[in-house]
Amino acid sequence: MKRQIRKNVHKRMCALILTVATMFGGFSTAPALAASNLPVQTEGVIAKQPLAQVPAIAICPPAIALANDPLISLGRNYQELLDLQPNGQLAYGTNNQGKKLSHVTFIEKWFDLENPVVAEYFISADKEQKIQQITVKFPKGSDRTALIKQLSNTLGEPEQGESESGSPSEYFAHWLKGGVTYDLQDFGDSLEVYLLPAFLQEAAQYQLPDNTYILQQGLADVTGDGNKKRVSLLGKRFDGNGLYMQNLYLLVEDPSQTEGQGILVKLPEESDGGYGAEMQLHDFNGDKIPDIFITANTGGSGGVYYHHIVTVKDRQAKLLYHPAEETQLNITGSFQDNYRATVTIKETKKAYTIDLKDRQSAYDEGEIYKNGKLVTPVETWHTSYNLLTPVDVNNDGVYELKGLQTIKGTCNADSIATATSLWKFTGNQWQLLEADVKCLE
Image 1: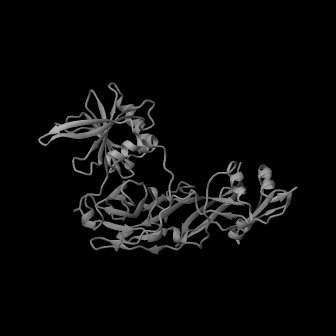
Image 2 (image 1 turned 180 degrees about the horizontal axis):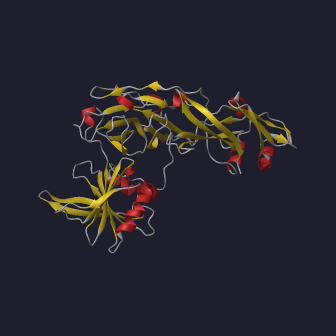
Image 3 (image 1 turned 90 degrees about the vertical axis):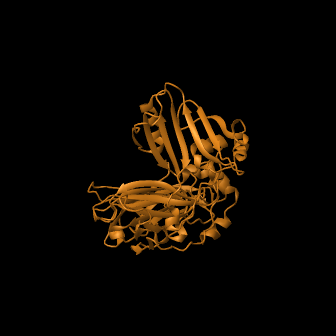
């Protein structure tokens, strides 16, 4: 029915609404979620799953894309880098084989700093000539404390401290984010940051591909045995230069034990990929043991995310939440005369009226209304979650989920309202605590 209605609306409608609406998209409804078991791998093999169709993503202007996410550059052929940023200067070195291309130097803006800095993109010595390291050099006299604070705004809190005796540097700070390691070294008279791909070194021990990246790491007792575990969010790049990560995994390891003895958890095949995958550690089920909340942008035009919550208590992996059985509001509605829409939340049976007068001109031109009279029936529809955020509403240490969905009118670009919801994990399922609908201002 929704498709039929949208076909009846003039194509120019979306172009008109696009100028006044926020871009979201996609819609789905799903039943409440009960916890389900996940496959766990300690030493055996989890079979590789076929990749679902990967959505397109808009490419940022080269200078912005390369500086904002170095993973785009690392592993790319240096000539491709120059095609994107033609203002680089080539630097050469010599060895017993003669003159060799060493690196390409750019002047770029990094880490939201006010002024541009020198960035050197080092090139592998083999025939592939790929970017294998980026060195960012800061001006002499830069304040280390201020610089670490600035980088932390982008990368999060670092591991930092005095360098070991005999090291050429005096102080270090280390970050890991999105498949890249950032190592700041203070040499006394200069500050530099070295960027390298964060490959999982023990990938072969878990029978994972060599190009498996560590996207994020945390330290917490997620199994309940009293010992902190290293929790790693892993992903495999869909291609050599893109940011889409397929086959997302969780790896839970005891730092005091031999490598390769951890718990490897593969996310469900239909939702185990995305852009900008991140995790948070919170207790959702009230057992006083942190669970693992994972989110990843699907990459579609709708601004919709995949969300998973995994518990590994007693080394048994179980899904508390995942997209295939997503708990969300079911909202129905339709346009009415006088530039209004009425919508009802099925779970609460509460109805809302949405004022559409701010888009009267566009609706009239699109032949949805004529003199305030509805002439083309329109049923509203809604997205899946654009945001699903862990919140501790009563400060008891047990987290709830706050969801945000978008209600649509004539087309994907026609966002007319938002729906919020608050959910708590009770027993073996998510219980709705509250819900509301608000018009978009």
